[in-house]
Image 1 (cartoon, one colour):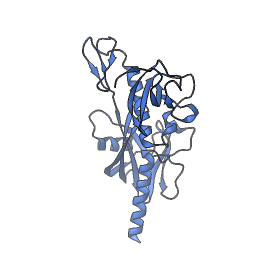
Image 2: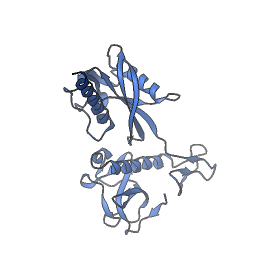
Image 3: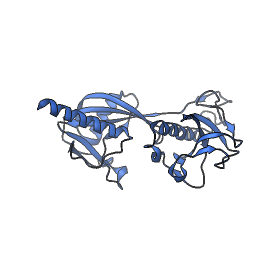
Image 4: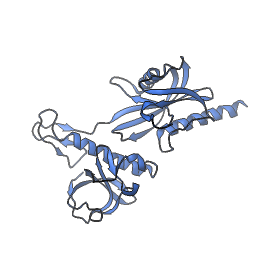
Length: 262
């Protein structure tokens, strides 16, 4: 967690991030010495290791090639997680330059991911927003929706939403599903999770079964929603997402039941 002023000889992978964007010249995370990439004199800290080399974080931006970290999501899961950590930490440091209690300027801790106030002695840690995402099965079909945020894309995906104060994860799953689709679900079970730095979420994936209600999508969140037979799906998320994992798990369960019932 130590903050270094780069001399130019430091070597590794360079995560330069600001505002949820990361520097990806030619679409790749830059590798080499600080001098090679014109980073000498900048302040940086090590946030992890990949392929035997340090992954460095620089809180700032370059003149061009500032991109979404989604561009490297499919390259390597560990690399994406480390870059995601850098993006989230950069946003944390940007939003915690001053203490929220007394207004004094804060400094970075050198022993943990935290910001410290030397005036009132408050300590701030990066906040992670828990989100649920759920694949819902109805016999040989899965519920897929086209989200408002994907208005320029034909992508259909499963339902998701943020956990509210005082909720269990299972309660959040049931509530979000009902709010967005007007249906009830049962047999909610946990599958897996994925850190998602957009900007600081942790996606927790579930599977569930349809239990009743007439499908009616929330137009504020979704442009459409429908039940799709497992072998006749629209365009779905890429393989590096937990949404795709939930869709594929649902398909596997349907096929397994069909084989068993033959």
